[in-house]
Amino acid sequence: MKIQFFNSELKAPKVSFVLLDWSCRESFHGLEYFNQQTIPRSDYEILWIEYFSRKADQIEQGLVADADEGRPCRVDQWLIMEMPDDLYYHKHLMYNLGIVAARGEIVVLCDSDVMLRPGFVESIVREFEDRDEGIVLHLDEVRSVQKNFYPFNHPSIEEVMAGGCINWSQEENKTTGLLDTEDRLHTLNYGACMAARREDLIAIGGADQHVDYLGHICGPYEMTFRLVNFGLKEVWSDNEFLYHTWHPGTDGKGNYLGPHDGFNMSSTALGARHTERIFPLEENPAIFSLRTKVNEISRDRLLEQVIAESPWQEWTLEKLEEQQRKFKPAVSNVKILVGQFVEKTRQFLKKNKNPKQLFRGLFVHSFHYIGKIIQQSQYNVKKCSDCLASLEKNNIESFALFGRGEIAETLYQLSKKSSVRLTNIFENGPEKSFYELKSLPVEKLKEYSGLIILGHRENIEANIAVLKKHDIPMSRIILLI
Image (cartoon, rainbow, N blue to C red; front, side, top):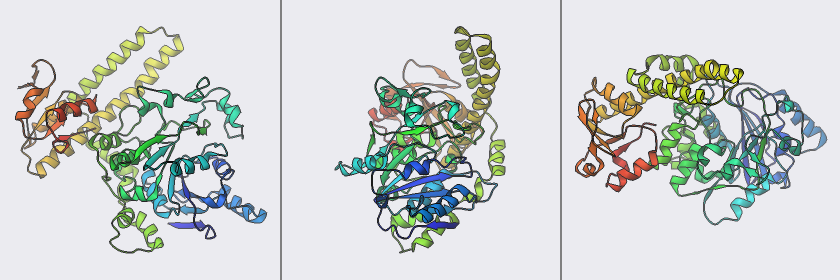
């Protein structure tokens, strides 16, 4: 890793903004907005973290111009991680480097290619100063799909807002996510901007570096869920926003996708939310050193430790492809998912479509959907295989299912070749057969003392509530999401 630039004159900023690049940024206009704020520039710092080895000319030339014209530096820390080119990017490793390097009391993990109003930074500071309770703060992002602002041509925010914003209500002057009362988890942009106190981020073990978060399916929200489990309150600003203009690749197409819920929300992060887990599955060694305070380590040594002791050798494109080849879709899962595909096609054909929509729906979108269901089936097999291997390793001889679905089907098939036996299936509703097993009513749960695995991914919170109502603690519930 190379520290390309460090502003030693900045002594005690209140806030540290961590901005990421993995040699993908075409425009660096975000830095202009971060440097044009109402709050004194000495009250906040800007960290720019490059994952690979690119030394962006726009930043280098900008820093020279800043010095020549007597302006504050446009970035205060410029860290180039110099990761090998054959690795996939891992934002959570970059988050952890930012948390370790940050000098501010508040750390903000934020999109770097955005437009901001001048009061943006001040509003974040005010949110933390005005509250006695511990919070994790999110700010939503207004997203424009108009292509006439690409390449970025410095429109005003008012021009961007005039039309083409897919998640903005002109009547309510808010994002549609903030107005949503049914599914805010998917309509709010949980990945756009998150702020928390640095000491709280360290206390929960920083960003989770598990391989599930590699590539596009990731974000600071996995820390949000664990910070809430830690006792903080999740807060969304309703009067300050980020503004994002269209550019190629904004939806993650062509990127590696880890396990998700079908709406690009990480399944692993949702698992932490449902199980009330606080610590990461894979903790960064430098964050661990800061959290446990076992030894006093210098700042330079901690920065080295962030990368040097992380398992990044496993993140190569070759290894990822090898992992995917290893786990073939389960026959039972393919049957379920093909059934879902047929149902979606039937619903699509019921609606009136013009010829162009019909062609795209049947031939383009269906191709992408088939790819997704194959990937999901591979993931199910891996997750269920790992679960059975873990049970076997811990000398667990049997387990039960609660509900049926793709997880239940996959576990049933895999358990036939495992020493860990499926002995019961519990369900709401009338007794039904599940292969050679007869389902048992939920009232019988009190007579069962073993581990219970949720058999499907729908209504997870409601199912956990049913299990808890029948005196099943979380320590006996396994989620494979």
